[in-house]
Length: 355
Image 1 (cartoon, rainbow, N blue to C red):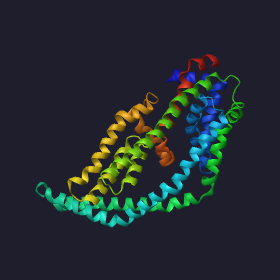
Image 2 (cartoon, helix red, strand yellow):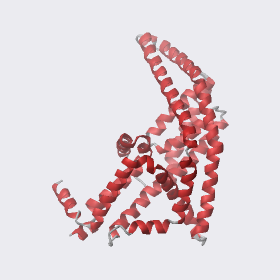
Image 3 (cartoon, rainbow, N blue to C red):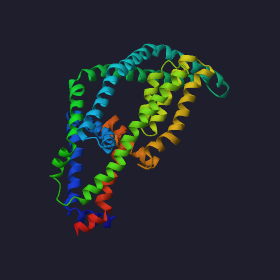
Image 4 (cartoon, helix red, strand yellow):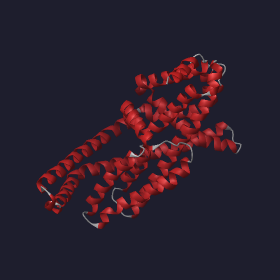
């Protein structure tokens, strides 16, 4: 530990290391203190970063960058309008319908819990077990009602904010169009010797960029496939559950378990205590197996290899700092932090330059 600390102190003399640390401090401080004000810029930056891969593909077939940017931005704008004026209203309608059906869903679950407590009455105090189960059902109802109410109240607010509807697409276009100029403007504040910084940025782009783009396509494929599969089995809540299934890939490990609960509850509510009620859960389980063993490895490849215990630690750590946003971006943030830390502590080049 003392040797590691000594190396760290010695390498602080390297301008590249100092620049990396300063950039990290400014980035974390900026997000912590000005996160809400910078949210449109950060959102636009993420979208521009995601779309850059499509632009590079068009450039490889000898299209000028400005033409590639216009084509990709047009597609982005079309999808954005589809989400705002087609998918979002459908989501709101489903949330309103479920909020109206919550009392009926609760009664169905209470009946189920009562039957379960009666079936185990010979094993202990059935009244005690029933009270616990009913308490859990009522608590679940309250959480579900509060969540749906929050979402229904928040959606119109988001849609009415002109900053997001107008400013984000505007920023996305110019971030893509003027990428070279913006990068050059940023680099001029970096040390003249930028070999280490360039290598760190390349590592981060490979790991974090590959992860974010991969998760984006995984979300689209899994969400659309889930919606189609749920429609085939005539699940009334196919759109909402398909959307949740797609979004579950953004919350490592926990997302799978969290979404399974509404799948089970809504299945029981629609079909009652019959074999048909487990069809949505079977479909969901099959989709998760396919995603975990085929889809995710195929899309992400060797981009990010993080142990499950490390993923859980990252989710808990960044979730406690930045809430839901921290949970969504836990893995890329962890990889970013690890890349910069490795460069500072273990880079041979940084040690040579500092000495």
